[in-house]
Length: 328
Figure 1 (cartoon, rainbow, N blue to C red):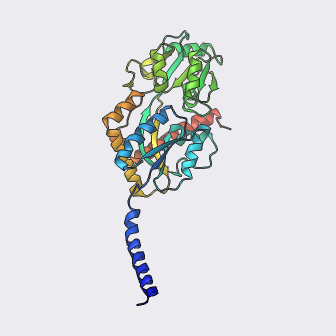
Figure 2: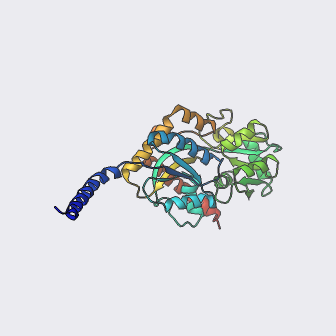
Figure 3: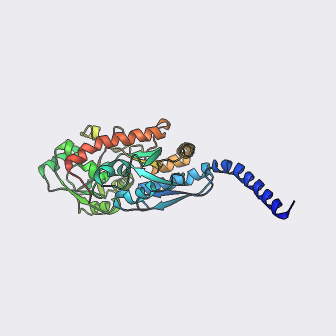
């Protein structure tokens, strides 16, 4: 046998061996770090929940999960980046009601918030609190509504921008109470809260993670939580039903999505890692500490997340359209 023939036979044998091994290797997921995009700035509730999950999910997946903040345009910059990513399970996004239900109504997007993503898991939800500046004369929610009616278009509500959860909640509040007030957009919840504390704006409908510390410090007034049940994080605050505004129920949720087309076994592995994380007592406590609630196990499925997303789009579309809200 010539040296050349021996070389070719050896090459053929090695190629066969590699081809036999590669399919097995391809089934191993994950084999490298995963990127979890948070489409908002660091420090907010979306970022906090993303980092809590990433830290625990790496235990189940056996690979680091790198959290990357890509903020801007109501979350659409970061979400758009994930929509364009390869559907291989190595890029995820922490989506919220705003990014995956409301933005498709408010913004003209280069992607479809429903059809371009694979639902992975519903991870947390919360309801906002109706709050006001500490000098507001109203002692309870009924008095606040009466004050707003007595001062049409003179009051102002802080929001985190056009189409933000605060803005949409304010429109819903107006439609139920027959009140009229101005919306003042800010670059985020933190600067909005600062101006509420200083009395530059009158009211806000804000996440507990932002509102509760200020209510307890008596720098603002808290009237009611927009939910059917009191929050475990703030049982002293009545529900809107108890406070006199039945039906003003708002649920802001947090979830994990992957680009559409991710393999089913990869999606299942990601969901299992998220479910494992949400069952961890330390994770549950940390999420509760920031005023969020973990959905029951049966609601942590991709199917349940898709149903929640669909229901929110159907609920909020007529309210947003009626108000003529359209972001530039």
